[in-house]
Image 1 (cartoon, rainbow, N blue to C red):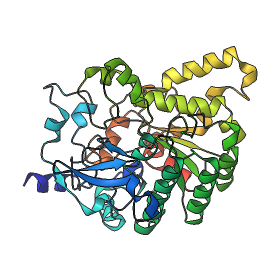
Image 2: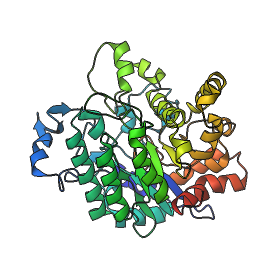
Image 3: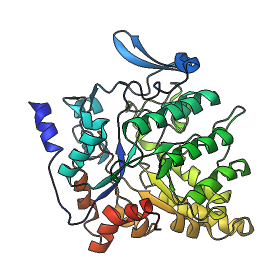
Length: 407
């Protein structure tokens, strides 16, 4: 009965009077998403295995606990963790306690036809769609570049099989690209564009490589960014396992892997690893000149929150004051022209608007993840102080214009 009640609740309808465009929806990958198109020589490197009666992932010879249940046969209900993320967990419950009854797999988690029916019921017109488990690729495969590229392509091909990149021009799954090898990245981008991709997903992190990591702003990647610039698509820098959990592990003195839902130490709540990763990524793209060399590209920060923005603005101002000749123009101006931010619902969006104009802010529900909102359109309550025109830009026209190449 509790599960039925929850499913009824997440289907409630609300009408804002204009088509809503959601910049952050997700699918839960089915078990063959990474293996259906994976060459057989790599099958041993990406396995679902049984450990003490539970299904786990074995990636590149490593048993991973990154996602507790990588089959997603049961999941936490959408919005189940809202109190946690609003910092209103006054009873001190654990995430497991806040989760309550889990939901059995629902077809709208990975099927476009039923997802679209659900969005109609929720009052959402269009949605960008991102993977859930895919962070395991670049975050857990070390310097095995060939394996990364093969898993990325298998996932992209699965998306084309199951969703297409523009299902009824309302659902827009991403094409995931790894920059680990520039030539392979260009090839994957060309393939995705041939299959109709409207946006690409890039992990906000130093680019992995055979001999260490490096900035995505280095000249070796210019041929890739030139293709993106010419294609008139936008780039989404969606939260991922960016390797920044290592900062926490240095302080904790334990652990060897990022665990997506581990909240066992309050120190973790004080270390904004997501904000540090996206701030550094955008800094690299600006400071190393990508955003100015390829001015047609628009960049979307999705599910990274926004508390990092004010600090980054100050850092960019200081860097420009110290090294003005190393920038084509003021880096804050570059940021405000090129970068869109999808903030968390629990943040102060009025303060964000002091640094990011309403024309560069995007609504993202994170549906169906438990840290998102059960009812996506409830987000309108967070922008009650915006003018009606600003609300419509935030909830609708900003993303619509990106998808249509008008920006």
